[in-house]
Length: 413
Ligand SMILES: [Zn+2]
Image (cartoon, rainbow, N blue to C red; front, side, top):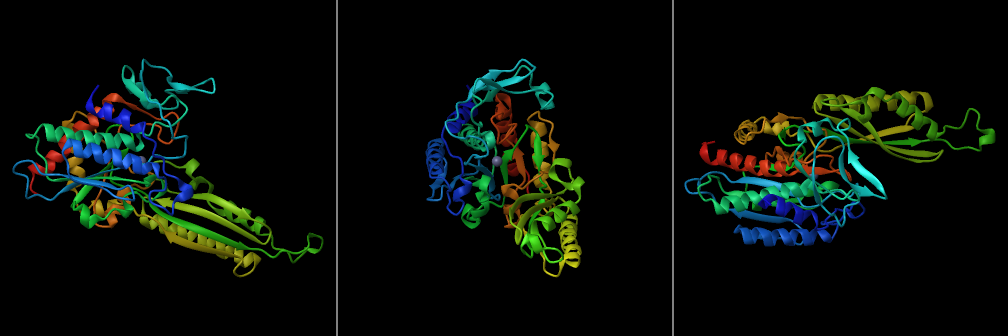
């Protein structure tokens, strides 16, 4: 069994789901501290320097540059040590399935096969003949992002064992609570000391991301006028009816279930209320900043239209900016993209550049001054009991990382 596979199988068996109900605390789940301390031990035994595991479950470490690369800026590698709690995420029991085509049977749950078919996931057709790591079907696998963690650790071990491999000083960070929106956002960048970095937190082998959505949230507050229903004529304004009108005026083609690729959307996330007050919350997403601003304007126009019909201040829209498309920052450092694409090809993997339909740790880090594109881990079906990762994808990703770090030692920037 290769080093990265051994590490991966071990890490997925350490429970560390983040807990959205406890998002005010970092880590949100004390189990993340166990994962952090296990990783601290591993980084020490690999021979990394300055290994720090802090009380918030952030793990940082350094690896000094190879001979001759000492004066170059340090390169960061980042993965998250929490797993999602969107699917059962404790007591993960990984096993290796030799996939011979047809349905990939991950395991059994409640007497039923948990499987993925090539019609659900056409990429399966390219994986025939491979060994694939799955959970037993009762939990997610947590390749998101323990594959990234294992790949970075395995790279560090390889670089230590083979001093002839060129690389600049490396700064490693494993962060908690990425799945609930903290992650690298709270990383002390000055202490971290990298000039640029990559997150290793993407999906299928070869996918490379340097664009994310721009994100904002819209909170729509609807104030109705409640009266006795028996004498409501001409007086009552039912906030529930107004909320339904509001949602009906949002373009139906621009919902998550109807969009893909670079198409943005309006997504109604939450509604609660009664006749006199409804709170309706949307998230808005677009890769294009101007189009996101237009979406925000559309919601304000809908509010204005309904206020004309039902009375001033019936509907109030409050917009809050979320994360932004990291492409704006990465564009200023095009070598971060070029090096990554070259490294893929040198490792024998044809890269596919894909705009992320979401955010990454890098969307926040890039705007905090650490430009940070995203490399794939090799996994599929994240946040699901059907999550899996091919053994060769884990191994190839370590090769890609080896080629990538060499770029930052070989070329002057
Ligand atoms: Zn992730």
